[in-house]
Amino acid sequence: MDSDTSDTVGDGQQNTPCDNLFHGYAGFWKRLAAFCIDISILIVTGICLLLLAVFIAPRDKFAILTVMWLALCLSNVVIPWLYFAGFESSSFQATPGKMAVGIKVTDADGNRIAVDRASRRFWGKILSVLIIFVGYLMAAFTRKKQGLHDIIAGCLVVNKSKPRWVKAAVTIVISVAGAMIMFFVGILLPATSGSVLTSKMIAMKNRAKDIYVGIIEANTAREGLGLESVLPKSGEKMEAADDIDIPQMTFANSSDYFTVLYDIENYSTPQTWSPFANGFDYSKFAGAGVPVSPSRSKRLKAKNNAWTIAANITGEMSDRIPVIVSRNIDPTSLIPREGDLRQQFIRPSEEFKTPFGNQGFILIRKGGTTLHMITSKPVNLHILYVNPSEEELQEIRDAFQKIKYLTP
Image 1 (tube, rainbow, N blue to C red):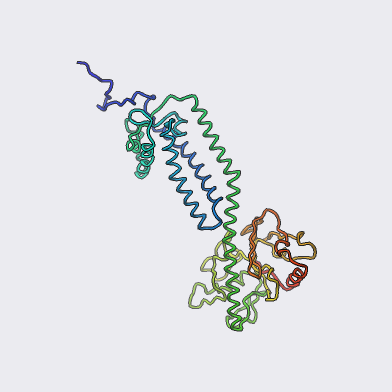
Image 2: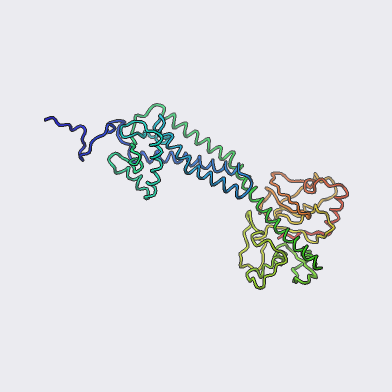
């Protein structure tokens, strides 16, 4: 009796038409190499997408977080699905990584798979990952070198003759990946750095405004009670202050002033805490490289204070005078001298590099308007004082005869 042994393997299982095609099933290590190539391409794509999302997002913290969340969803789910399902159901039957190592995806009969089956194979990989990657390791031990996701989708990964154009395809893939990296380094990285700096600057500007509004509101309330201003005066040391009567509120630096203004010494004991101004806390003095003061600290230290403040300000002085300034600015450079203001420039501080170094600054004028600038070149005083008339400029110069800036 004739026996048909050509379709039977030693373990009693029947061969499929694919068993003798395409030089056999693709082994575990070859599949792993293809996977590494594909993941590298997707990682570069995801990084570029995230950076682009930050670059185009509105300069608002919530908007940036929302856009980045959407970009993460795209780069971690949607794009990988389109990448694997699209390539594996295409005429290539393989992703760039699989093309590079000479393997492709087929159905049980060695035919090209449809998009729905390729999608089922992709989503099946989630289960392969959830069981601690055992679904992937199965490809090293099953007879047909199938992972769990291959079995779920009814797919095979097989070797194939390597076409002459595979080397060209690999070269193209590497070139595209290299171009994307160059795009990231050359264009998106500087743009993203500027976007991050802008976000930090807006956050710091809002903190400075909270401090200034707190001071102005406190003064308004005190004026109605006939009490003295809580704006600082310059002096050699910090004077004791009383909420009922402030004969002298003199300070040698802004850190001591803010300590008294917010009653930081008693902040941790609500029963005795009695700030002169409300609406801000420790966090308002920090940010963009300036660390937050520990809650247990009894005094605000210079390293935790981002702000310089003008002392001896009075009501009749010009509203254009800067009152609160980020400490990375040399406050003496804010004083207008005789001559053309276009030739007088704001200088960075030699003592304090944070919060923005020489990349930008923040200031709040006496009238409450703010100025925040990112700049690669010095800003002249003509911009700072908004094209003043000669009379207004002289008024500003006269005021600076009395003003002294208190640095941290």
